[in-house]
Amino acid sequence: MKKLAVTLSFFVFFFSLQLLAQPLNKKQSFTYADTLRGSITPGRSWWDVLRYDVEVTPDYNKKAIAGKTTIHYKIVQDKYSDYMQIDLQEPLRIDTIFYDKKLYINYPGKPYYNDGNVWFIPLPKAAKNSVHSVTIAYHGSPREAVHAPWDGGWIWARDERGRPWMTVACQGLGASVWYPCKDHQSDEPDNGASLTMNVPDTLIAIAGGKLKNKVLKNGLASYTWEVTNPINNYNIIPYIGKYVNFTETFNGEKGTLNCSYWVLDYNLDKAKKQFTQVPQMLKAFEYWFGPYPFYEDDYKLVDAPHLGMEHQSAIAYGNGYANGYLGKAYPSSSEWALKFDYIIVHESGHEWFANNITTKDVADMWVHEGFTNYSEVLFTEFYNNKEAGTDYLLGLRHKIQNDKPVIGIYGVNKEGSGDMYAKGANIIHTLRQVINDDEKFRTLLRGLNQNFYHKVVTTKQVEDYISQKTGKNFSKFFDQYLRTAQIPTLEIRKDKDNMEYKWSNCIKGFDMPVRLSNGAWLQPTTEWTKLKDDNLELKNLDVDKNFYIKTKTIS
Ligand SMILES: [Zn+2]
Image (tube, rainbow, N blue to C red):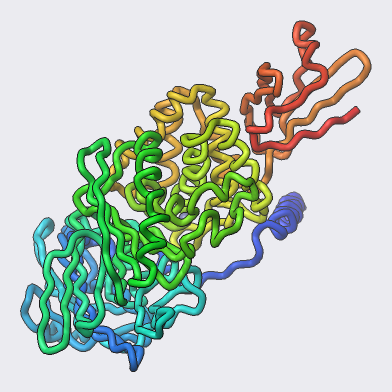
């Protein structure tokens, strides 16, 4: 009987947990394909990408591409899977494979094959630390973008004058939508990447990094661009259209940075005016975050037929040469949002948070979007004052849903809540309040970019770094704000003689100090604390609005 009682109560407990969890976590089921895409599978773990050389020939009229990608890699395990997992999304098909530059006929008795978007290629075994290459030729009609950049794919657009304009947006969806790669954020090519585009010679082709080669032959133009730094797969992007160029240099913390702007011919005058915001952005962000992380690869803005994307060293720009977000005060409803071009500031902010510091798993993407959303606050503060920054930040709060935790689900290519943006920014701002030392906070932001320079990280590494450098243990703070959807509530209980306060709607042990608008601090815990006599002037207690919390008064 006892056993039954335990089982029953377990069920009751489990069932109530389920009920509690329901509104926050809508039922989600993940497939084998999600695991293949989102985790470090046996076919991925044994090799480290050193470099990608991507070549693509688009056929605008047929909406098709033919491509060839060479993946240079190092073997990092002694014993490992017989197969290399390569992601290449349907309906693209592999035509031929070369192993160490030789045409590769299948490993005896083991053909290469695909399971949906994943290809398994058997390869001869080689010694740990040895370096090899696989070249994959492929072709097909890649998935076409539905609503870029969010619902992405290849974009076969026409410019305002009816001429072909092509690019790709594939964040989340994955770069394997158009070229074969290890489509996981944890493995960036250590030595960079090149992208060769073969196009009609009436069009210009741009990509990240520097132009290494241009060949004109029989009406075709072949452009090769190269980045020398590690890069996210989704940031290796072709831009093909009727582009013209203008340049300038920025004298920054690390020397002279080449800034290059590629815009459609008819946008040249507008761009020359609007892009004066670039050096302003660089100045503000170098102040807050440290040197631009890719001096060797230049800084570029490239006209795109979608809103924008943080493509490393060649940012996609499509904000209509207007301030705000397509001319509107958004995502912040504050009027300060109309003082700058959202895409120039936000997407460039990602050069530090997303491109310099990249998360291993997209579940931790708040590190990209939270800090970058906050970069808009810091930009506003830099050119105006602290109050303006705060105003911009408060204007973001209407975006917060608290629908589910900011951190997503690991191993299945699943981002967390869209709150990673506005709530992420508010979490960072709240953290800044607790640190209560703006210079220390700036040093922390610069330290993150220095310590995790060109690295892939987990949110935990970022959180631990913050705790370590500030000398304050922020683990409960991050657990509360990133791993639950609950907003801590400061409860205040008053009667005629006493006043008490505590944290509720929070995890066990949450004890964030909080500042009142009169400058005094409270140190609430999850237990009631009596307001001391000498603090009685705090009776009309009013929390500093910079903290992202709720308050509740019980009389
Ligand atoms: Zn972003």
